[in-house]
Amino acid sequence: MKIRSMIDRDKPAIMHILRNTPEFTPEEVDLAEEVIDDYLEDSAASGFFTLVADLEPGIGGYVVYGSVPISYNVWELYWFAVDGNIRGQGIGRKLWETAENNMWEAGARLLVIETSTKSEYDRTNLFYERAGYKEVGLIKDFYMIGDDQITYEKRRPQ
Ligand SMILES: CC(C)(COP(=O)(O)OP(=O)(O)OC[C@H]1O[C@@H](n2cnc3c(N)ncnc32)[C@H](O)[C@@H]1OP(=O)(O)O)[C@@H](O)C(=O)NCCC(=O)NCCS
Image: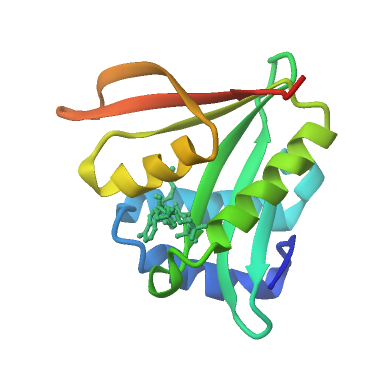
């Protein structure tokens, strides 16, 4: 498996993964596509960084992250998905480790992940906790009544 930056021809495979990720609503998939299009049109101007897991052949998943504008070296995870048929095989970990290393190298001081507390995200949130993320905030009923937003953070290793 190779972790590399996304290029134009990866888009159909990524859209297929997104459309078959039951955790994501159609609106979220549309938004994810807009982010991909912005990135592919002009990655530098978009402010997004997008990595894919290239299984040679086939794309196993992708991650989008970027620095938060007007913050002091805070970086954030924007989108993250691995093909539902091949989850639990270490692809997400490899993608996220590469993204994290890139962010530290780019000078990140603080990494932030905002996600949902819906039960569908239990395993995802366990993934973040196992990756060393600490829960630092919760906004009740953020996404919908009964669907809270949880914030995780990780600080630059000393
Ligand atoms: C979160 C996600 C990207 C992780 O990718 P992955 O390739 O399954 O992750 P890995 O195989 O590297 O790590 C597996 C760990 O992730 C967690 N995990 C999350 N969802 C899982 C799933 N459906 N199947 C297996 N493990 C899952 C488990 O804690 C597991 O730990 P374990 O192997 O010690 O049991 C992937 O599960 C996914 O696409 N989830 C749905 C979309 C999503 O929630 N995106 C994030 C939005 S904030």
